[in-house]
Length: 196
Image (cartoon, rainbow, N blue to C red; front, top):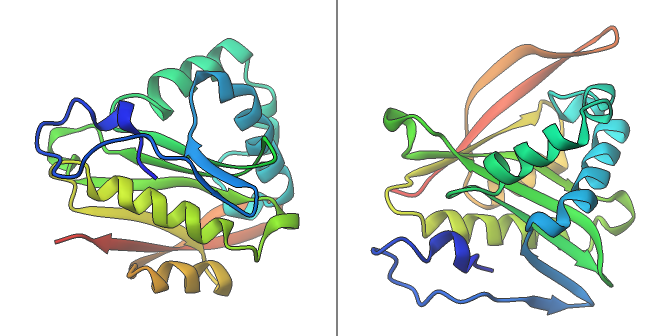
C-alpha cells in the first residue's frame, strides 16, 4: 500500500508510484485524507477511552479539543509532508489505523515513529494489524534518507511486542513510569527497526 500523493515529489524513489487499494475479506487499506478526519477522530476517541494505558493523550483531553484545532492538526501535521495515517476499512467503516510521522528537525529526519496503532477489538486476530504495520513500513522504506522507525509499546503487552519483533523491531530502552493512568504507573518499552 503506497500513498502516491506523499511520495510523488521525491525524485529518488525507485519503485513505480501508484495508489493501491488492497482488498481482502472486504478490508480496504488506504491513506487517510481530509474527508476521513471525522472517522479518524471517532476511532481515536474509542482507542483512548478503551485502552488508556496505551496512549499518552487522555480521552478527556482529546474529546474536549475544539474541532477546528483538531482538524488543523490532522491536516497540517498528521497527514502533511511525509507524514501519513493508514486506515483499514471494513465495508466502508474505519476499523483500524496506523500513524507514521517523520521527525521534523534536520538532525533527526533520518528517523520516523509510529504514534498511533489501533485496531478495533472485534476485528483483532483477522490480520488487519499486521497488514497495517506491513504497509506502513513499506511506505516508510520509500522515504529518502529515512533509516529507522521507532515506537513504544506498553511493557508486558506480549501480543503487540511479538508483532513488532516479527517485523524486526528491537528494544533499545525502557521508560519506567512513563504514563500514569489514575493511580497506576505504566512502563513503556522503546523499540526501533533499522533499515540500514
